Length: 220
Image (tube, rainbow, N blue to C red):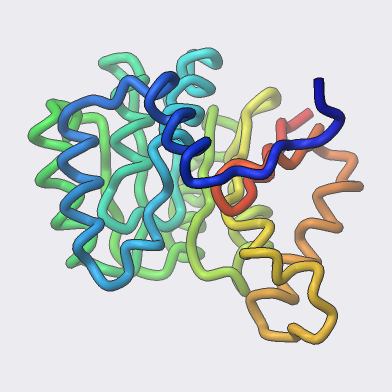
């Protein structure tokens, strides 16, 4: 029995992944290729991908939006769990990253479910709202530039239907959120958003210590 989350050693993490993650072979290939990049730390872990896919499957989500896609692991995990008529809009500043992601999405047979949008995510989200997307999305995942997180949160909340869920990544920020001497823009933005989410009456929210911390908010 335990009244708090266990410390996650490398061995315990390896066990968790081994027994609980049934990773699609293209996800494995994508993860291993991305691991060779200098900025591979930007990729979520396989257990987080499995959790996100499970949640999307549980919700029966058919319309989703992702802010910050990198090489496409999270989008692929989610798209594989969505039905054939689903649509996932992925927003990223980098055409290079999205081009890499598309290779794997197509290889896994889900490329037709995913629309990639290159450019500032605030603009892409605004375009979705202007096109009448408010209240029509089931799911959103935010994993991009931290100082803009609140902007993305507000836009995604508007896009979501009641009962829709937003997932916000990196909310523990390697522990920096509790270090008072860290006043960097990213850390301050995350602290403020975490505090806001904890008392935002528009959502039911909880934080889980998966990866670098994941905040889940369900729109009321």
